[in-house]
Image (cartoon, rainbow, N blue to C red; front, top):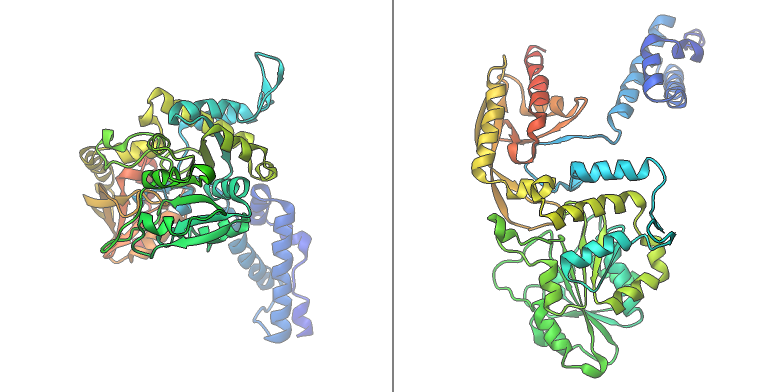
Length: 468
């Protein structure tokens, strides 16, 4: 054993290896050095405890280097990067939800690459609220008296509860006490805000009388939460926001607020574009809802944000609340949100990626899938065809609504679909697909046609998988 310990390579020799130098250039010296030290220590332990079969210095260096390279390659792969979403899930939670439009991305780059007028009025030469530019657009697009934006929609709900209802009761239907991911539950967010949650009705049915029976002098708000990631079907019933508004007006001396979390952030009437009608933020405010909250990176198609729109006196209370400072948006998100809202103001929906994917007709997607299939069908070693598929909005938006789509179905004789999927994922720009019945599926609705050439080039290498 003592003799074999002498085979452990020196660190400076490993750091000079040509393959290791490549990782030093792409990652950092400290990262590479740390991995090499851990692997040489692993080799030491193996020699001491197991008598690992390294018979000379060359074998020992190769042992350390091979394991280090595998780990360093993983560090390269597991960095934040662009991917190609071929899943057919338009708002894919794991893939960053809404991709920004090119205009919004360019605006972010322009604003943050130097100084900017985040809290400064160029025309007046004095300090101005960072929300000024975005708020004006939100008021125009929603009809709200005032608006605010924070770092996500859960934060928007939290701030509304904290600033408007702290220490008092908030009534919410049992069927709307949702979990929004990572075990975060709306009931806990309400409690953390300092409010008392009162549950109305049953899971599947809650009527207006259930709310009314719970109203008391300590009631601060009637809360409506959009079930953004599931649907309840069968023997069901719920009170609409307009009914809650009517109920609240029955108590003029101690009127409870009506606060609605709409989740998806729909600013445009989807029925105008061939989709099922979904209530818009403007609709909610027109119904008399006092405060509406919604996401910036769902159907709205912008950056992660929680938007608050409603009556000025209530929005101003949230703006003055100390928690707002903790939750407010930074300059990058504000720049992206402003650029996205300008696209709405101009009716430029086709250049907002989420809306483009949602609004694209089935015929158009079918033709698109056909073009991709034509590019791939001539490649050696793969079988593919274009066919119908079902896309989804995803991301906690329009739950349960399938969207007709088309896809390219790929198979390589003798190669498991999981191997093809792994190959596609481990490219410079990963291609994220799905697998069904032994075929890898590339849904054309969520793939930008500008990436077709790259997909073809990547798939050219599938013939090599079949040989190994």
